[in-house]
Image (cartoon, one colour):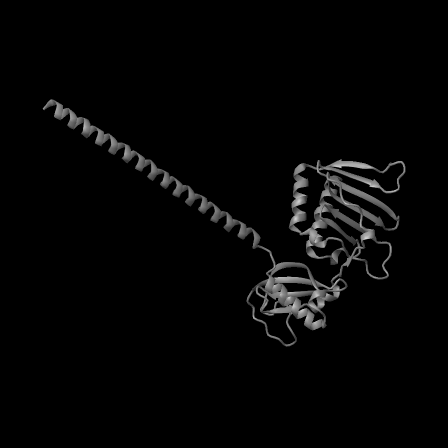
Length: 288
């Protein structure tokens, strides 16, 4: 009897032990599955959130393609030229104060509702045109008066482009002309040094070295990006015909060169004016 009980307990214990082992294996496997599922869900959630953020970062202030095409088609039709001859050189979001996009025609009654939309500048390299539109391009108007005052850029010949910047230089301005007819070069280095020299000064007697903070350098770089300085790559905004004694400024970043003069500065695209203002503030900060 004892032998039978012993065998029973041994057999029963073996069964219990085996069951416990199997249960443990299933529990671990189940736990792994849950962990795997949870990890996968977490990864998917993070990826989805990341994509949402990326999309949101891309959308603001980007001109919609259908809107750009509508403006180009309208101008090509008006001028009787190919769309390929036109390019959008500047744009920014606007909220127009009435339904006529602030460009009423003669005897036209405009609604007083605010209309969100865009101000778009189109060029053929010789002449600029300014458009007011709503958000989709279903309503667009050519600003005839603005076209009379807008300065059209021309491409800077490759032979007249200054040399590219060294790796340690953030920005460079070359100014030439004026009554004195002298040429000065001012460069901003990554370490904050602002160095100004006169080209042709054999004794280097007019060299000046000043310094701005690293924070100012970073702010200036961000200003260049916000103003889309690279959009004006290798473009020149010339002085009016017959103008004399003006100063020409040649600005160069790591992404390209743009040229303008003191006479036509107020007629530059707004984004380019923003970049010029940011640079002038950097220079002025070292002279106070």
